[in-house]
Image (cartoon, rainbow, N blue to C red; front, side):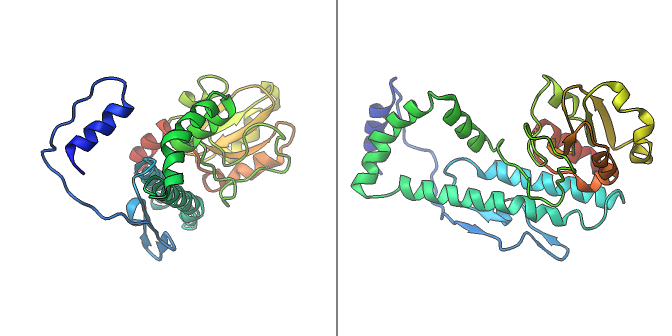
Length: 281
């Protein structure tokens, strides 16, 4: 493709004058769309580009690879320190492989459409799509879904065996395996430290300290307790998603959390990922 043609295209789609120049260095690369059948085989584990490689369309590759590594990292850290059973890393593929496959499908479709020579598809991409996108994004619902998809904040692990909803999960609000919302404001910052975070709601009398003695014994360095108020209770694990959710009226979920280092589910605020991965190892 000649520089003059690129300059013409740039002039057509940019409001300000942007001058292109000859590149100092160029190279070709081959695009692949491949995913590993399994992320683990015995002692060997795959993450990032070793597990899934695809077109750079959508800019999803780096985020997906980082989340793979962090999901696996904190689990291996607990196992290596003797704080979790060896079965815990088995949840890594269950949680991350569906995300990797979803990214492969998305980037493959986007690349196929973006490079199609079909005149109708090209017309839709260059003329119709920009106008329809602007109209659709004016509504909060579609705009939110697009943002959560592109940012990968919408990823959840509800089907992971490391997620449990308790005997009486709340009917509304986040579910076990969802990303921890910042409600009340500042909750993500308070629960971003390394380790596990037990979130309690309701009056203090409902959650006396002796009720958690057996849960916290020997795990003081891993579990932080936060008393919030409200109607729901949950526990987050090192990556900041709900591991356990239940209504504040039941005690069975509290007993379930005796295995809190094993039964919580991974999800998201990114600020909690790095700190745990570094300090746990």
